[in-house]
Length: 67
Image (cartoon, rainbow, N blue to C red; front, side, top):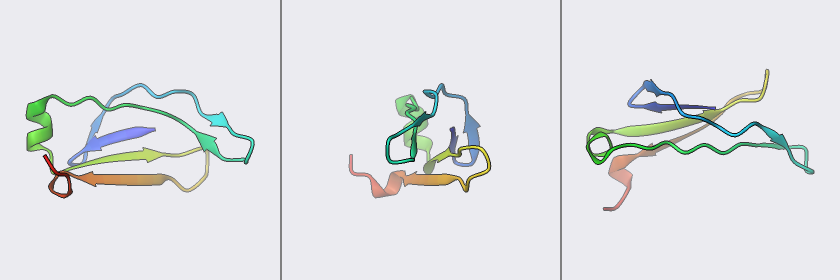
């Protein structure tokens, strides 16, 4: 599992992948940013990948968030 802020990698711990009953894997990870980092960020991306599987990517754009 990896995080990027505006394309720059951020090191964060992630839980070990767990194989669920439905055959899917799950992880958890929390990215912590300072208020200044968040204010400057355009987008934050999380990517999860299990071995040779296609990665799952989610991008949050700060402009799409309220507050």
